[in-house]
Image (cartoon, rainbow, N blue to C red; front, side):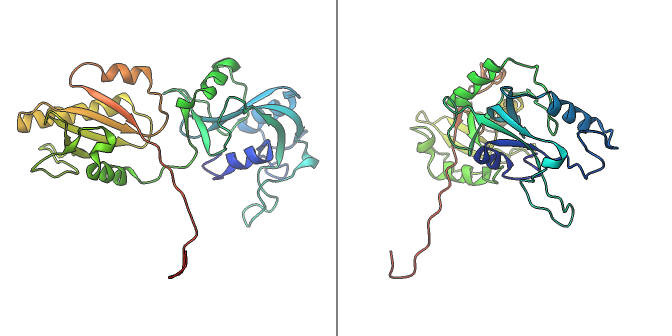
Length: 289
């Protein structure tokens, strides 16, 4: 639901609750009776009825991420208890997200800020939009995943910063890896190959061998590695030089085992993780500090 209600997870974290948006006035979504026979509401209603104090909830987020594990303290889900987290508007006057489940978040071995969430392994899908029982893994598996800081990622949506990142690397290549320098007599950014493909940044290492840099916002995939290898082969075909590759990525610092396996062998591909940190401060008038 984070896509439909940006900031919902941070609100849940602050208010120590999760919430469901099936209003009793919306197409008959009532805990008892009602006209709505949609599978989503039936699954949600059954889950709400079955849930009891002491049960555990894990919050699923977009892009294969989770928030925290919460222990259920009490429910406020009956039709007459509707208390929306978001006020009503012209589309729905009764408000949004009004069936609340109050929880105690497990934060002893987890990020203590709602701005950080946990990246799941590549390919794992928790589903979305429906309250459902989790059978994919035991709770201890989720706890181990949450406790590992290498899996912590920003909850912020995707900024359009791939180009800014590659510009920064082109200007300060030594900050990525000591010994890296701009590639002489070539465009630093966006080396265009004969087939129309283009790399993000082209550099040289301390041995004056070419290094192709590819920047990705999310955790790297096997296709990302294959893409970088195609660039390396293109450069070899056009210049005769044997390059290596560096895949600079966001997402979780832990790289999926299958992606590590894909990167083995020749030509060599290394992984480097970056972290975006945005800060704000008040502006000053001239002559004031």
